[in-house]
Length: 447
Figure 1 (tube, rainbow, N blue to C red):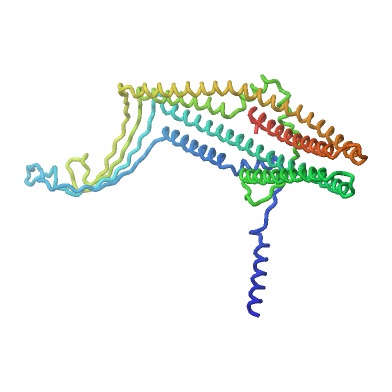
Figure 2 (figure 1 turned 45 degrees about the horizontal axis):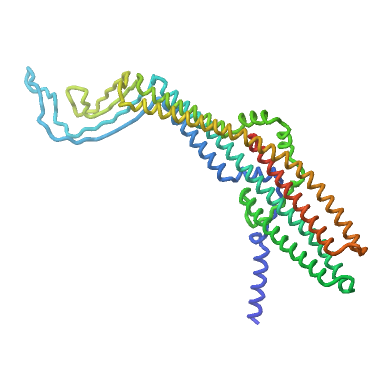
């Protein structure tokens, strides 16, 4: 009895555990815009770019501190060896000690200094850091655009895989009905057995295609879950239709290649980052050149010590002293370091500008390619719609002829296959067009 009760309790616990939220599968409905927003919010690449922006902000603050005064405080104790006291005899008798034996020395000091004139070095360093921060901003926009393209690719891959599976499922329903019809005719002796075998073979091939389509959909869903930061065990329901065009790429495709290229040159963050970093390198060259120019600074200090070495005669008491002054330094020769640093910075700026020129050359080709891809995708999708309509009508006519006994089962199988291939081709072309639109948007500098 106890064994039965134990098993019953264990079964109840198992059912309760399986029905708990930890094991429940979550379903998330996503439009393309939702997926893009989630992808940007969870992408490690964007988080990395933002962290680099924070580092650039800190670097700007560090460089701007060069304009501010600096202050320091110090304290110390020093033990010295005993010395013979030195004194001067007094006229009335006795001795005036000038240098006493004080082995314990205590010292506290505060210093402040500030650069007054640096021949433009401070301004150049701050300007370079500010430009680096702007380049970090451009890197964030680049990362966001890359993530948006990756999410769009994964989203349309999932929609395509599921649409392909749906098309194959519909074809399987049609072939099932056809197999049943052929089997009835074979059983009554109107058709030979090989017609039934051919129909069953076709049905088996469509089952394999359905398995492959569902597997592709599962993989595409896992990829999209990864990109949008959703648990891999979740189920994503897509809400953006495959056959409805995106108005933003559609408007871009109506622009001329020249206008698109000019738009991309002004909007692409990668190009902006190259230009900004070239300017930053030139500022680094100016800072290096300023090292051989005059530098002016002011400094002040306050000291409290026992004994105070600046006060004669020395006494074993706390005494205060201070100083303030202005200094001018001019490094006349540094072994060629400043010149070499300036040349290296100039070469780095030229290298970045040449990379930008190469980017511009590739950008023109990319814009033309993406625009042609969208235009050819639209034309191909229109043609595929005509093919689907024609194949649907052809299948209907052949099935009617087959029922009337004037068409063979081979004709029906060929019509079924043609319709399935036409529908799958339309699905692939629609997905390719959506991806081409996303790539055109990315090439033009959009997200």
